Length: 183
Image (cartoon, helix red, strand yellow):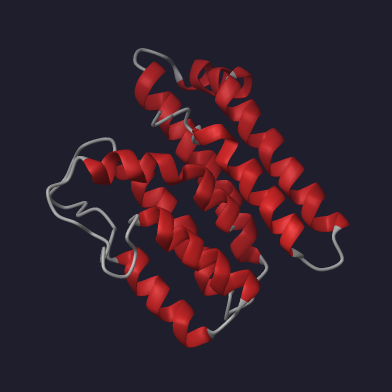
């Protein structure tokens, strides 16, 4: 699940960079969300500790957009990214298998929501569904999730090299699940 959040991270970085306030404590995470993501991987995989995961969870949730006062589109994929991140951290101390399925679906919904927002005007529901089915972003996401699943299933236990491979796969050269690239 953290791989899904990392894949969506450029969406949150772009949105939060436009805000006026610093949402992450720079004294703890000098590079902001990037360091918070690194700390999340460390806690979930390398050094699991429920108390530290709860602190990370609080830091992640502090970044959530104020949906009542912000109607910009960017708040939606940012909220999705942070929700995925939240679910990954919660799964570190509450192992519920359906959480992974919900995270997978949420990531796909984030993409279809983006397609509907950017390309869906004037399309009927059937046309929109056909657009989803044939869209490169949806195909990329399904391919990513399949590769992620295959990697995890073939591993006996997540080792450092597998984690690095998953992170590299999720980072996708800086391109998010909805095609956002910061560079």
